[in-house]
Image: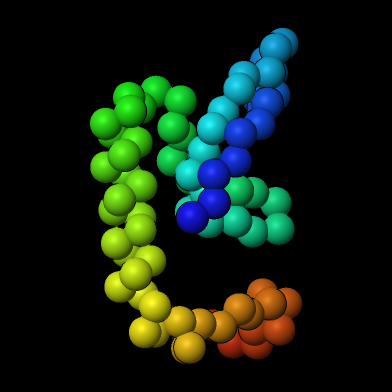
Length: 78
């Protein structure tokens, strides 16, 4: 579980906004996740419990986790 707190200046905005985000996905240009800023303590606790349970259930399968460079993918078969 990765949580990041940062100032973010949205395009066109004059002032940055502070975010605290549970990161779910990242790529070369973006980090995506659930903003924690507007969640109350109970909602945060529930969210963190869900993530911990999910990560625990994934453990037996992580031996098959792979990371692929997009530039090395030759043919996308859907």
